[in-house]
Picture 1 (cartoon, one colour):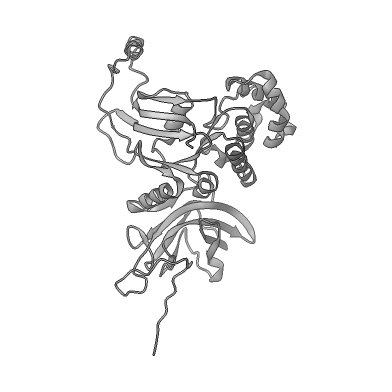
Picture 2 (picture 1 turned 90 degrees about the vertical axis):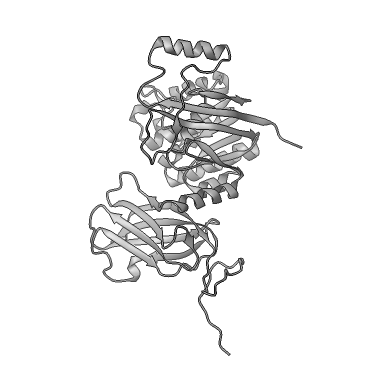
Length: 408
């Protein structure tokens, strides 16, 4: 028996003029509205360029989204993935009705709660308590409904001590805790969450993922979740939607969509992670001797430090997508290896079989943790001629390939 479709997007496109707002004048904006009201094509619609952030364009008109078509059923948890600038946030803004599509239609059944950025819908001069009621009212809840959920919202957010403090005094983590608690607990049929959860600490991220699992499986609510953390996506979601340059590159069951994303990410660029506002690390980069990371070939991890730090210890943990640690690469196995701000770790032979993997990064000094990034790099390994016999080894459940020889 098929489930009810709660979100239906048909030929949805969004065009922006990078040089100005609207059409330029009130008269032109009114003309655009009048044409739309009569079902006619936008008179100012231009032939825009594809949304490719890596290339300089020849026009100020760009398609942030182009010809998007999909259906989402009730109870689905959809991971929306793609590179920065692929159109993920634009799509969520259209679904949240904070902006409208240039062409096409979006049909949604049920009330929508969205969390697109830290402090969405909060007034900085109001207290946490007042903002819960304000945000709930914006989402279409009655005062009675909000009151019945109030204690549960405050307890989940973990900011009870500051609930009567103006939220302008909250940290970004406290903001997102309270905002997510409101969006997740109020009676909406559709929950839309952008990657703002990355602001919260590890404990809250785990708590938020658990809550989203509860509202989808236990309450039958629909969740759209944007994240670059493939571990969180895999833990939470059952469907995936991959955007590339403003268009849908893959849509459907989760793992094929993730595989396409990881494969595409390795096919034309090196994997790189650049942490924001870290005093020690500029970036970490994963490169391979071929365009794809292939079994049997060398792989290299390049770390660029912002400053030379004496006695620095680097740990790189390699995990599979079952969150099982496979091996560790660490500088404290060796003596005096960090002598500059450029650090390189070479794995001469990659013995991982075909599949998806991720990297955890840890920097320490004198036993003290300086920074720890979970799932900072996600990469795909494809099968290769590991044994140099001009044939690909059979894919088996083995976790590693091991160089060996036979004698008789």
